[in-house]
Image 1: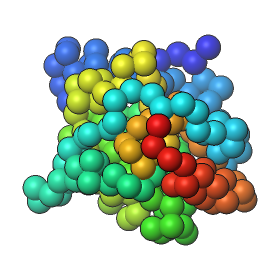
Image 2: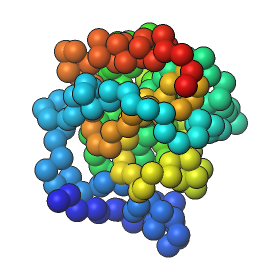
Image 3: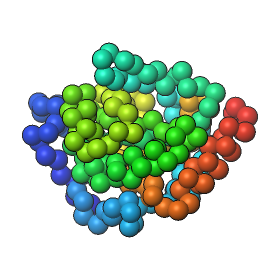
Image 4: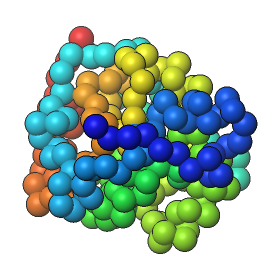
Length: 199
């Protein structure tokens, strides 16, 4: 069993923030493998199922007061990737995700979102880690918990969102972004959802 551990100095501060972060982060490395040598494959891990939860409607925050309403992405399926600056497994996964986004570009829309992570820390973390393709979008833990009502998730978490904004599949833990078939797998998943009719 993977033990949950959190570096308290890196959290937002305060007991409430620590408790909220602990419920999100699968931070103990334990037997968790790096994305390059043992992360979960895209298929069958993210094979879409029936729609779950309410349509995702986050208002993401970015640098210089920029925002992104996920409702504005209706009409096209996308991948929502949730991570945090204080989550060690997330840190291990991000370089592979950065390379995947650089390679695939707009053909596979991936929206990375730092949960319960202050924007200044996110920007410093991404700059120091040389992760230019990870957009510095942020989201409060409360907003995320209001939407994800299917138990207590662990980060990192990758979600398949259909063209109506509904969750169709999710995986907690590292994904094999660098696997040879990852691009084709994501393309097949998203094209299948694009072709499907609204439920």
